[in-house]
Length: 126
Image (spheres, rainbow, N blue to C red):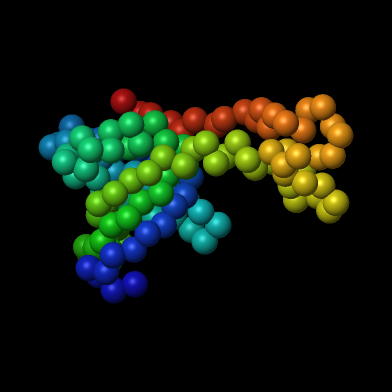
């Protein structure tokens, strides 16, 4: 992707960093099945999307591509916490003949409520 182009992507949060010398900038690394993405969140974006920046385990980001010294980053413009979507995943979904735990299953009395799955939290190195 060309530098300066606006893109949108999502991934699991691997690392958050807020160096003392960064003047309020937070760096986030996310990962999906294709690889990792380095995010730069300027202080105004951090203020607007603070909860998503600091708490999300699954994060959607829209921003502009930047290349500096051979390293590619996404400069964040908009962030969205997609962590609740992790609850819809399970190994059962990948097994032939089964349905997602959140979908009704005939006369099963448990069909009306989704199965509770553990929620993995991302690390916060503060």
